[in-house]
Length: 107
Image (cartoon, rainbow, N blue to C red; front, side):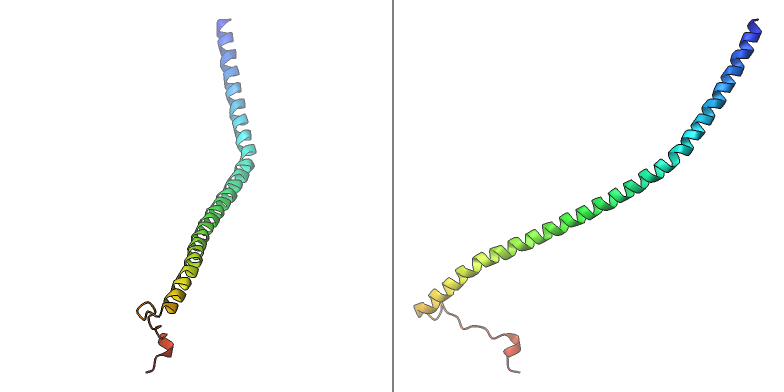
């Protein structure tokens, strides 16, 4: 009786192992399309992330350029006012002769 019980337990264990193996194979087959979809979504996310980083870099660069231009525009009126004041003072050293552009120079 004990031997029959042991043989039955061995057969049950083998049957359960076989069922487990089949279930794992079915699960792998079922998961394959999901994994492909996840990989595609991840690739798209990575691409979107790269685009967002590039956009942030470009935005930062343009903000820096805009800041430089804004500073130049703030300084420009001050320089014009100083130049006008120097021209009105009659002091020749305060009003240097403007340099001729290279295209206007005689050869």
